[in-house]
Length: 584
Ligand SMILES: *[C@@H]1O[C@H](CO)[C@@H](O)[C@H](O)[C@H]1NC(C)=O
Ligand SMILES: *[C@@H]1O[C@H](CO)[C@@H](O)[C@H](O)[C@H]1NC(C)=O
Ligand SMILES: *[C@@H]1O[C@H](CO)[C@@H](O)[C@H](O)[C@H]1NC(C)=O
Ligand SMILES: *[C@@H]1O[C@H](CO)[C@@H](O)[C@H](O)[C@H]1NC(C)=O
Image 1: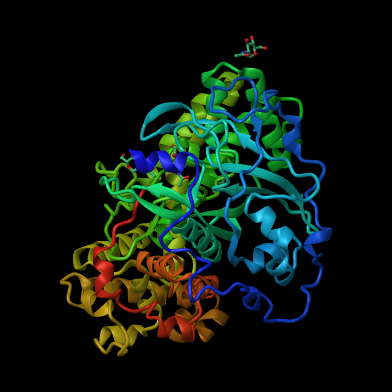
Image 2: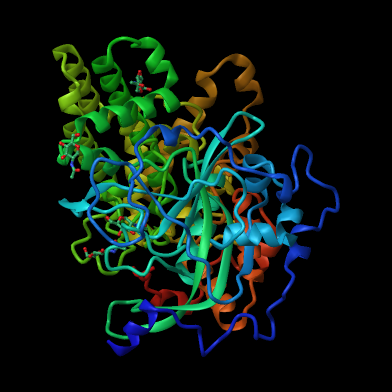
């Protein structure tokens, strides 16, 4: 307990200082300045500012500006300044695409800019029009109403409208206490920040709707964390991720307003969300708010189904699917104890403390439904017309179908079938393969990848390419031959069903090429993240973070450095014993 008291004030790491480390490279800008040209359309950070018209300012802000933990009513946000580090901030990584394409910033300039480092670490000065808001929300956690939660260690620093008309809200995660911090210290540790930084960009590259990450900064300020909740807290480096999303509103944003009977604010928030993010619905239901809210709900149902189908198609398990971690825009947000499944196991649970496995891989689709029911309950008081209530009800009823549709579509793409032919047969094909994978404990990612790197005739004759390490397990299963026959016939049928032109051009090569474009060869496996974390923590060496960043940006492309690092090979022995921690 004495130790814990320390982090409540502040303390610097006494053990491994990043800066004093031999491998720490003070200037990592060479990593981001390889191309000497300035990215077109970008501005230097010193000329950059947030937008001066954030729609969020239409919502009420807490008049109390002092930063202490409390219950808050009738407002959406509290003003709070990020807390700078005591020790010097150190830039770990930047995301080129995010800076260039979303923020109109030049990555090389950002890597060298003191002012950018100040913003990205929660320091001063900040660019003009900074907002500094912590959001008030509630939520259902593990099935129970948890009351007021809110941004306990995140601060929304500003909104940005880019040159392409894209709107992004920038948050610092890990930038200190807010009125919503409850018992927390408002900090995030380097370990979990590296994971969030890498995962959100990797998910984007996999085509999954997600928040993005622009930068990662660490420091020698320490936080105490009991990584495995086993009574062994240790000091860890703290870090801040600058992350972006078109909106950070969650289902819990609306839930707390309903619970507290703040119906006017609930209406106001919904109007803002629909006007800003679903303008077509506003057009359609200009003077009928009740219909507008119902249509919004039906849309969220569809998009949530689509998002979760994408999770399932890449073996991603979020880990904490509480309603406060579920975006109203159906983006993947709040990367905590997530995991990319390795060995296919429907009961995979990345959060080692989630003993009941409530958020296990195979439950995610139904957890999505549960969360939508909570949203439905929240919206009901504002949906006054019977017809609109029916729309909501039908929307909810269609969730399962929407999910199945999306999932089957993605899976038939993964299997190289052009379009879902006969739905029942495709379902049989997918279920059959998953059952075999489960039985032989096949690696999820590499099963599909190896199928896309092998011709069907080689599969039929059991002549596998030398580098395969997953398919040999599948071949040994008693159901494999039958499955392969079905697969072969469906693949051929897809080819012959299409127009004559297609038939003529169909070839195994094309099937394989199509499949390689949707089945990643590299995902962020725990052991890969762990290696990057160890090197960063122990040696102040961020090169593995940078390598993973590069590799995971093009997960479908065979890359030399990734092959050398063994990212598509059988995971190393030491990785078998890894546990994901929950504390972050
Ligand atoms: C919130 O606003 C309502 C309506 O204006 C008011 O009746 C209520 O007292 C307010 N609650 C608090 C805690 O300020
Ligand atoms: C939901 O998706 C289905 C299938 O794509 C579509 O037919 C339906 O119109 C969508 N509903 C809404 C409200 O977007
Ligand atoms: C998800 O929500 C819980 C509260 O329900 C919060 O404590 C946690 O930090 C969130 N998860 C992540 C990864 O941010
Ligand atoms: C992991 O699961 C446990 C048990 O349900 C829960 O208390 C904990 O909050 C979860 N971890 C996170 C980060 O949500």
